Length: 74
Image (cartoon, rainbow, N blue to C red):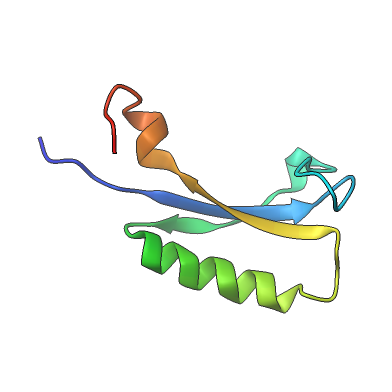
């Protein structure tokens, strides 16, 4: 079976803008899942820039393929 790279883009309000702790994980903004890091970066940049005026809002890119196959090294 071939390897599939997947990247999750998500974000939300933080408790403190100096730390990456979500204030309400139940209200996370799930932007989407992308096949390439480049696609994920494009979505991340778009959503991050639309919230640039709020220091408490932050978006992240999570490499889902590393969670799905932890025994494999990238």
